[in-house]
Image 1: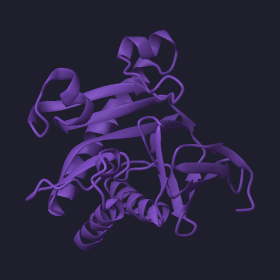
Image 2: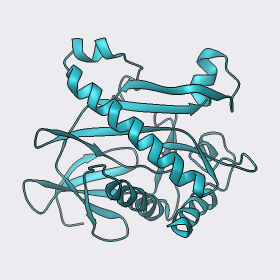
Image 3: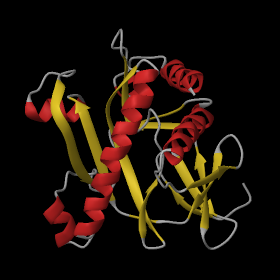
Image 4: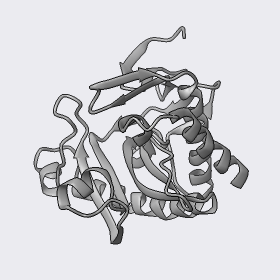
Length: 235
């Protein structure tokens, strides 16, 4: 791509956009786990994740969620609004799994009595540690009103996505979101894909997400393809 590279993450790259208010986001074939300790290149993953995220962002936009996505340029590149990313990931949990189960001794797959909202510091160097609201405000990562707005949007998105995935025969176990500042507003940024969600088949409990890579379960691309197929069939 004949654009200046601005940032390269674990599975996406950000390039300069068409003007001062846009970026170009590239979905790559890279797969990582353990904060980058485990790596692989999976042929077609970038295109598949780009397609899944585009379907989900289109659905959210139609249901009143402002996102950074302007349009897909091609199979792996998206034109997005230039946002200032808030360096805090918002994690939403509907069912106990992963680190939540490990930390609190709750069996994986246990439905939670209420939706759990967590925050983590967006820092590869520090291992994305958990952080709470008062710590976020104390070190100036975001203001109280911004945190409240991110939580409000995250819970709304959770309701919309749970309904979408449920119609597709999938349980939305948990997921993480990133938000950015754009023209004085907090808007949804980054991506929503099986890389950033835990997705389980409603009937069998089969994992259809990045845990297939993390836990060496195999057929990562088959699972991601199944998610895309179900979403587009539902659409």
